[in-house]
Image 1 (tube, rainbow, N blue to C red):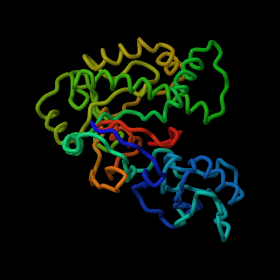
Image 2: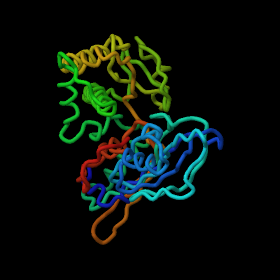
Image 3: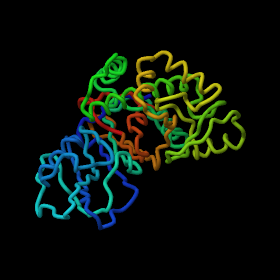
Length: 341
């Protein structure tokens, strides 16, 4: 495993959103293709609302993007009369690259994925070993962990979620704060199940009782009581992935060995598991494995030490840091980002 400096500059972490569809040129939603540098998604959305003279709720986006980066993503502004300011907006750290009308509002998570371009600097360690690991990642993927951004500084969002969900009278929270804590709680339980499967060495395989998700899709099937040759072949080809829980109301749909692992995790976190159940969220599933697409890398010596430049694509909801963590330990030169995918 190598060691490197990550995000010495915002340009060392570039993210480009892939909507998966083209604006249709009609309707009352003005889609803006925005490049931002050192600015978070919600703040830019607020500036767009002021520019357009609409309520903040009239501005939508599909995915949060890191602040400590250069990112390109779509925002939607609902303008029922199809009247937009002729100039601007003038936003520090952000520029509009294109604008198109579209017939539907952007929904959270509706984009297909993101393309990343990352530079690691001052790299130390075994180059050949890193090359071998990167080839293995390209072929077999990495554990699909939620990134530390989801949990807040020092895991503070998870601790806040424990207190809130276990309170006898749950405090009323603003919608964005409520979503943040619920998301942190579900992500934490998922990561604990994933860690247990990584420890067993079967996160990329199937075990009796697993539910499986189609690659790049939200749909899943199972539980499967027997992992037969057909399932093994589909796993090998990357067509399907074993899943873990995004916890909610009722019992996990997993069975047999998979259900036992999930039950052990939720028993160790009763405030989170029981609180999420009482909140009424439905049980959902997330793939335990993610396959970076079109993974490429290049080494260079800039005089101040080795650099490693990587590029790859991930589906919506997957974190680039999960790919980096599979082959490198890194010092984050910027503050820990408060957003990301």
